[in-house]
Length: 153
Ligand code: SF4
Ligand code: SF4
Image (cartoon, rainbow, N blue to C red):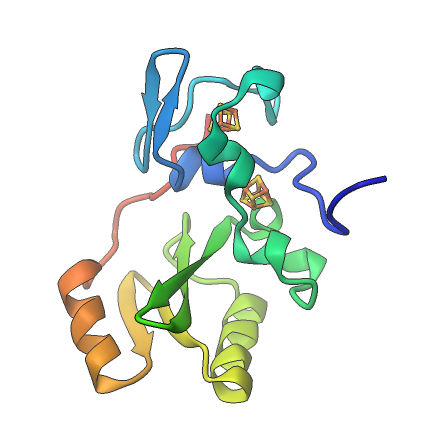
């Protein structure tokens, strides 16, 4: 039986745009996709590094996040992170526009759970959270994001 109710399946979005590590001597990182993605799968799955085994995007980890917001379905990966002890979500889209369903879902997380947010609309960074969080985001994330974050293989 599967350990998770959700599965990555043919999604490899984190391999193209988020994970940082090394597999069989080759580095991968944002702007530098992993070379072991083959036909939307990991070609070295059984010996993939621990960073790949342990990573869970928000979609994989959050049973309430619907399937149409799976990264491979909307070109956007939502990454769970922490600011001090508060969870926040970082949303990085490979298109300049953000999927409207995803934007609605993100804003609902903020309103309902006070989950802080960092996301990009038409390339411009938007932040939801406390003043201290906004200062933190200003120092950490670019204001404008006009580069394709993922390179699709
Ligand atoms: S982006 Fe999420 S769903 Fe896709 S492969 Fe990575 S962890 Fe799995
Ligand atoms: S080794 Fe496999 S799971 Fe890890 S980044 Fe590369 S393709 Fe993805």
